Image (tube, rainbow, N blue to C red; front, side, top):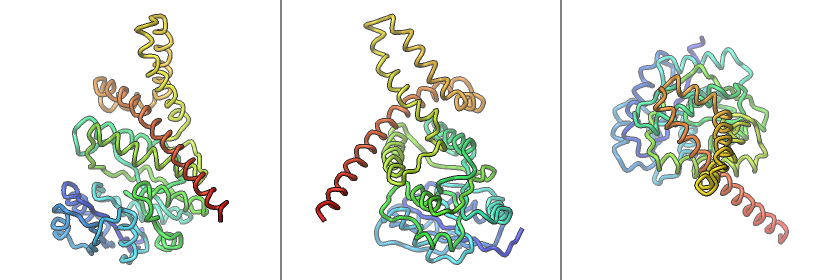
Length: 335
């Protein structure tokens, strides 16, 4: 391994006092030592900055909360590394993570960027955090290594490639890393998902924060982004079984009240439930192995509900994209 490769670790921080200390501690206990840490405090109002000051970081402060895209871009411009490693403040890396990143770029000289995978376990112990983390881990571990997107939470990229493609689009307040990854992919860059580099996600979800995150920060903008970029791959959370599960989940919902009025419709309902379980059987088997029967039953119900609200997000995203396209086409016609 070439230990002369210098890594710039860029950490955007906004009100992260609960996790940023553990994040930075994990970085500074790495067994690969040739790195710098650039922290961009995005106008935090909690104790985040005081915690960051306990570590030997280069600190950049913003005068307003501009979002993770702008924060990462500022950090990148202030960095010196051959490799830029973007790390969210709620992520804990392993001692070997930085070395694994260097070795990956060395062993695969044709790749331009990479990102890691969530490990199975997370720090928060409540059901919703555990469930969502298992979804993330399973998704990464069962996705294509030749990726069409990028992850700004734990992703590395060659410095010249990052700046050649203009960095993150600061107009995006969420999924800015997905948008950047699509640009890289369509520009001919190779992005590698290294499933063997696993990090710990410390984000705590509640029932309502999970729904808000999945709908407003993922389903709606991701739908618009895929339509805008015209990238439709059976990968990550949009594999064939995931897509088919959305209408099946709604059919189950619509058939539930029919059983009361038409008892014979119970057969149709049971058939739909069986189809839903079949479409998602691999994930449910994985959860059963990791967390047991009681957790799995709750996970099945949550998974069904997640397809319902993700379907709503899909509809909102489609409607929003159609309206924006119509408005923009009208402007072009008038001009």
